Image (tube, rainbow over all chains, first blue to last red; front, side, top):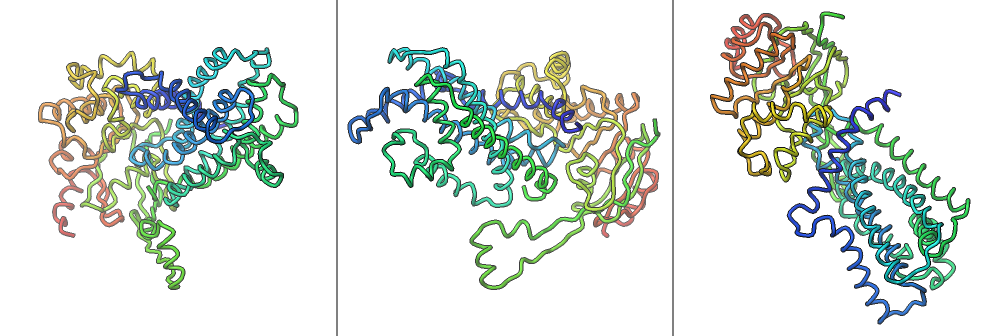
Length: 257
Length: 247
């Protein structure tokens, strides 16, 4: 209860930090926020040109297949990366003002999330261009994004703590992210993989979330209860572990920054 | 309502000096293979310090560099948790350990006012009401939409001080910050502190300047090497501190 009260008191700070991140991100670029839409679109064009000429995958509506996977993965990578360094970079502030410290990884994840919401416009543009059939099911799209947000907040909390004590994590994590990219069906179809690889994929939370997102946006299928339970429980587990680790270590940080 | 604003009881703060050293896996591995135990150098920045500060008091903390003054302030503001002992604070604290902590250099002064306000726990609407007064006090109307990175350190300090003192805090903590401003602004700051004092704010000041301590403070504590050496009125403590400043 006490925690909720402090959280409420600092919600303004959370808002300010998120808007700060967004302002600083595109400051002085001529196109500004349009980049959030343009960037995934341009990336999609590059990747789809490469993959439709070099390795051909038999995927219907490949551009949107690509775009959906890419947006989910990019958000995960941006949010967790920013969260990881959030405590380290806020060191000067943490050493001078008493604040609830989880606010730093949390605000980074949220600003990446706002960015993701802007980027959804890219999907809408592509849905119109490719004249994909749109069903009412598409209105369920916030569901996988919500699970993804939970997952990222949790992992962001864990990483922000780990990075304080073990700086090598900053370098190690980019390798991990590359591995994760290939373990997520972003540009290849799951059917192209051998069985043992598919089994490995099932341990990747992003695999389930990307699948659910595509089911909703691209194929117009209502996600199964099982898929929902899997994604939700992964999100909750990561948040609970994140909060436990963070709470245990938060008073100790300041000595290591 | 108790009359005590801050109660410090047997507070010790222990730093682990070894933590600065072993940070990377390579060093850890090398030490592990060589069989070096991680040396733990413990260092007490504060050692069993106790005192009380009454409401409305003006209290100075004296001591040479590295004596633990700033650590004491950080414990009072809740940034450090004491290793042992306890601390009790009645009322809101405005810490000014460094003016403008939390400014984002890329943002303009206008944006930073709201960001810094939020850091100190004030809402956006509240800051909007105070906005004019803040900029008036800092005398920065000409540079309101300039990124703070282009400000001089004196200008940053002016903005920081203006934001932190717009609200009447119960306890104001000032850590040798006023040295950066020019004479005109220092005078303004002292006037503002006097004004807050007369409204019942408890003031805690850390300073090397005996002159400033004597002119603003009633009571004082002298800390040396983490230990409380003396507690008393500002005159007594200053006199004793000056006698033993080579300690």
